[in-house]
Length: 505
Image (tube, rainbow, N blue to C red):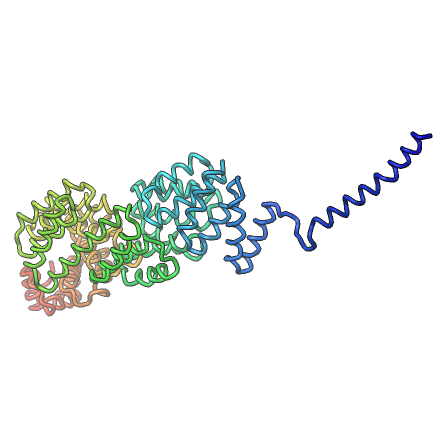
């Protein structure tokens, strides 16, 4: 009986006890307290905020989540949001944190994105980071495109193109296309590089890299005025993009504004103390400032300034090249050659030093054959430089290697945006030397359209029509060359004889 009463009492008490505990639980949870969100919920909410135009809200959510997340997932998402806001330093910190915690494909993405930002920020470790990304995920798009940029910077164009194409095939999107632009640029294929950069430039995660790359291609193909506004826009929205300041300095040097260039170069050097390229750029702009004195006729001042810079920095090849140019202006050719030879000893890849050595032999000494090896080295070091390749084509024409001259000069005339008469004139001359008169006329007509007062272009056209035995056009173009001041005696003698009624035989 007692046991039955005890069981009944317990049976009645347990539901009451459970009810009390439920009440206490309700009492302990204040009204309105939300359930703890999972990481997936936070990431989804942050994505919604970004899509709704509230990136600051997304950053706040992700930053708080990243502090408590041991997986690195929140830090990766945080880096992505910060990157499209052009807050590169904080994005790099987020990617570093993510890369230290994640593994596999996501680790590869975090490190690949980090490497790409390091590249823009002038961080020397960008190549090492790209290789770490590839080690984490050899098949991923971001490791491949980061490594493509690294190989392009190292001058390994073919390898860079293969990696960039792999990144595009793996879903790398616009960022992979921008990397392809850098790879094609390293190969010297400026037309393909320009097309890739223009394709990538509209995407938020590739806009800065593509804009800087496009500006560089425009400068290197003689279109520096088109490059300047692009860089101005990049610096306005992404002031941490050190590569934009560096390229802006080079563009301003190309536009003969070395004073303004120095401000950009100094900014880049101050923002990236470990970037040797930025430090060297300051010295290159110093050389450009001294050479600007040449345009003002102050040759002695330029020589004095550059001699002092060379003495302070004896292993700085641009100082020696600049000094050589100033010496050449005074026709002090042997001292100029000595400086250039020392420059290529210091830096065998200094394209400008090789070019200037070729120029001394070809233009100032009249020895095209001696110039060829140096021009070839200059073109090999900087294959997209239209000035180097034009002079190589001119020297090949002078030594009567007409077919090779045509090949080199055609590369110049087919460069996007090329609008100078020089290569067209030399191309016409090469075809003329090979007695391909109609091909020569086509090239020379292009030259005359660009430079209607070129006596040399009209003279070569005269010789083309002489070869075709076209009396009227010979008189027309040879006469125009004479009127423009052409002095070559053989052409003028034939013109006099033909105008007197003699037939072309």
